[in-house]
Image (cartoon, rainbow, N blue to C red; front, side, top):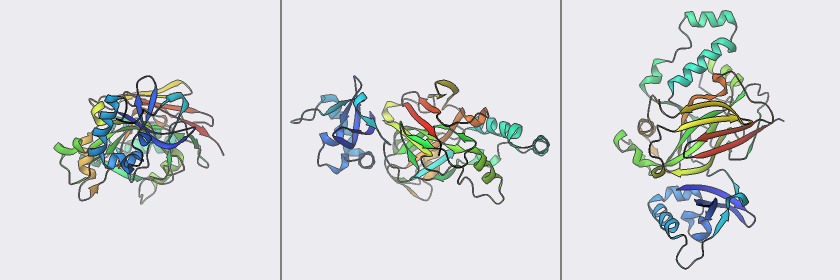
Length: 322
């Protein structure tokens, strides 16, 4: 199933279910008075009850005793699908790091510094990357959704996109084994991790470094949507084609294949010694060739960015200046 949050002329932030014929079923209205269907987060948290009810509703086309409440997709406004209680931003693609490091060595430092860094072996993927999935905590309040404008941070000289597959936790769990991890996945969503590279490079070069900060943290920097697609709809999340377009021009093409640490390992590691809760978002990291830094091409005011992942739809944002 493909789920969203939408508003229309007489509806404010209701849960929607995609129907054939470019229609959206108003789930919140169909289950009026039931708080489990009031928001997508509540629906995720109660998936053992809500998913069977939704499948029945979808198959019947209407809830018994109540007319189907559907809207034409063109007449609704798709919003941020939900507000995750936690965001963990992983990096699991070796090739993305190699591509980015190569560009930083060529353009992000002086030629002499670049030569010295290469001679000293800098710019190589660290061994720790291969040992465990690495991540930092994203700011769960800095959200934007499909169709939203993202305000360039000041000064924002090297604003960039990162096309990522987002994994949404369903059933809670602690110390989840890799063999059981996929049963804790509710579904998937497109995630665009907007990043200001000039600030980020300063932060990551600082010693000591606590990792990304203002290079990642600004209003609207975590974009997700338009749909949350339930796990049963995606046959293999490790084999999804990804395309990024800027103003209609293809800027990057890649695949979710090639993860050094696959999703079962990510979920298992994230749950080590702590409980994962329903709705937590695990962003898997930038798909190779799907960030501007890998070509040293960045975003400008007025640019439109489309991130497409097979089976998940297209997430669109535009960049605006101050």
